[in-house]
Length: 67
Image (cartoon, one colour):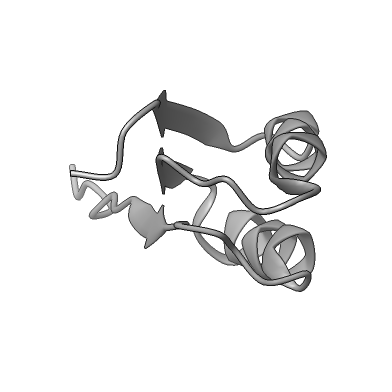
């Protein structure tokens, strides 16, 4: 029995650009596993963007502080 290698894509997202949601949706379609890591973003709209990423099937991890 041959197993298919499985991979996940990790996307750092400190004050992410507007195209983040489209990017992760494309990555989900290609890999099936995407993790977005927000490292203390404070840019307007970031929270809504991360919710949209989660709605697209992405795991979102958030930190309150940029470390």
